[in-house]
Image (tube, rainbow, N blue to C red):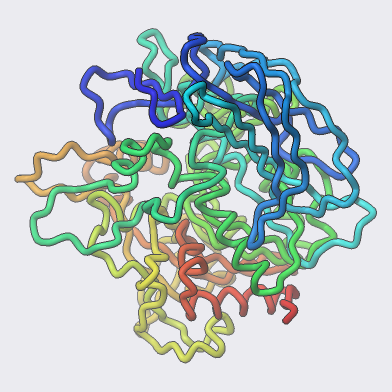
Length: 542
C-alpha cells in the first residue's frame, strides 16, 4: 500500500508494473492516513432537485465547493467548517456501492444553468497540507425551459465501466474465487477515480505523440505517467476530463449553446431527445443499453440529427436497481443469466444479438478498434485520409483527395470505428457484409486500424492489448478462432462517414480522439466540426 501525494492508492502486486499491475484508490480503515472522498447519489439532476452528497473523511472538519466547469469555470457554492466523519469502503463497494450516509443535502437553485458541476471536498492532512477529492454530476435543463439547439449526451456508461475506485471495473478487479477478476456488475454509488473529473495539462493522451524509431519496444506512456503521479491508469480511457470537457470548452468558446444529459437519462426518460435539433456524442462511448439505442434510432428515424465524434461503439449492457448498477459480462458472456438471448451483455455484432452498431450510427466498433498505441499502428498517420473532399463536411477546408486531416493533433485513435469496405475507382464503399447499409452510408475519410498488436519477434515487452480481442471478436462474429476467422477481423479501418436513417442523419467521425483536435485548435478539425453542427441546426453565435 502506497500513499501517493494526498491520495490513497492500493497496489496488489509485490513488484508493481505501471502497465500490467492492478492498482486503485479506496477508503482504507486507517485513521492515521489522511483521507477525504465524496460522491453524489445520481449522475444528473435538474433545478429544484435535491442534491445529496456522500462524504467520508478522517478529518474532523472539511470544506465543500461546487464549480460549474467549462471554458470559464464558475464557483456556485462554497461552505467550510463542515463536520467530518470517516466511513470505510466495503470490499465490494465497486459492485454494491459504498453505502455512506448523506453528509450534505441542498436543493439545486433555479439560477444554476445546465452544465457539468464539480463537487470539491478538502480537509487538512495534519501536516500543513490538504487532502482533496472531486466528483462530478450533470445538470439537465428544466422541462419548461427553452431547449438549447444542441444536446451533449455524456458517455456515462463508459465512465462507469472504467471507474476503478474501490478496486473493480469492467477490466480488472477483486472478483472471482481468486479475487483477481473484473466485475460484470458495477455501482454508481462511489467516487470517480482520479483523472476522470480533472487533469493537468501535461497528462498524456493514449495515442503516441512521437514516432517510434525502428525496432522500438512497445510503450504505453499514459499508464506510465498515471502510475508515477497517482492517477488511475484508466484516466485517458474515459471520463469528463479527457473527453466531454474538451468539447464543451471548445463549443462554449465558439458560441454554441448546450444542454446536457447522461446515457442514464437517455435510458430512463422517454422522449428526452425529441426537442433537440442535434445530439452530440464525443470521446469514448463504448457501452450502451438496448433502450438507449432504441431512443436514438427513433429520434433519427423521425428526422433528428446525431453528430458523433466518438469511437469504440462495442458492448451491450443492462442497467439494474433503478440504474444504480450496470452489468456487462463481456468476454465472460457464458456466465450471463441472459446468455443466448438478444439481451446478453456482449458485443453488439455477436450472433445472438445481431444488432451491429452500423444500424444505429453507420459504423461498427468491431470493424476498426485500435490505432496509435501499443503495437497497433503505432507509426500510423494519426489522422484521417480524405477520400471524398466534395462532401459537405469539408466545405471551406480546401482539403483535397488524399490529404490527411488531424495528424498534427493525433485525432485518429486510440479506438476507432469503421465498416467492411472495398475500393472502386479509388473510393471506399461499404460492402454491407457486417451490417452496414451501403446505399445509406457514405465513407468520406478513413485510416487503418488493428484488433491486435503487431509485436516483433525480438520484442521482450509484454503487450498490454495482445491478441485477446482478436480471438474474442472472431468467436463472437464468426463462431471460431481458426486462422481464417482471425484474419477476417485482424485488420480494419476507422472512418468518417455520413449515415442516413429514416428521415434523419448521423455524421460519424468514428474516433475517440477527435476532441484532441478541438483542444489543439486544429483548423481542419475545427471547421469540420462547425460544418456538421451548423448543418444540423446548431449555428454558433459570435
